[in-house]
Length: 169
Image 1: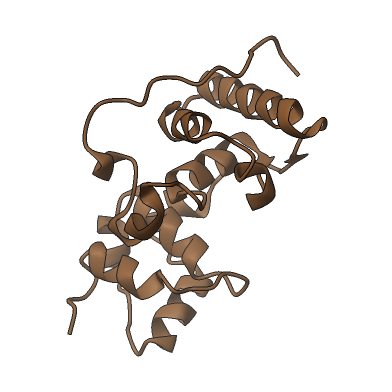
Image 2: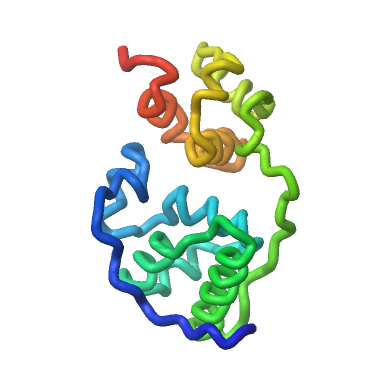
C-alpha cells in the first residue's frame, strides 16, 4: 500500500451526533457495527470493509476510522491507505477494492433512488423530492443503504423519523 502506518488517533472532542445517527445509538458505545459515517467514507474511498474485518479492530482503531476525514481526493487516498494498511496488519491481505461512483446517488438532491421510494412505500409512506433535497448527503446516504434489499432494514423507519420525514405515531 502506501507508507501510512495505522496508528489510532485520539477521538475528536465534540458531539457524537456529528459522527453517528440516533438510530445507531444501540451500538455506538461499543461500535460493534460499522457506523453509517464510516460506510460512507468507505464508499468514497473505494474499500469493501467486511464486518469480520471491523470486528478485528480495536475500539481506538474504530474511533480513528470514524474521525479521519474522507471528503477530498487527498483525504480519500489517505483514508484508503490507512484502512488497507490496518486490514493487512490484522489479516495479512487487503480488503477488496470497490469502484468509486463518479456521481454518488446521495449527492443528487433532485432524484430519489427507486430503492428508497420502494422502502418508504413498504411502510405506507411517500417521500417528496423537496423532503429528499432538504436532507444532507449523509442522511441521503443512510436512507440509500438502509433501503437496499440485502439490508436488514430495521433502522429505515427510525432514520426517516430522525431526519424529520415523518413524526412518530
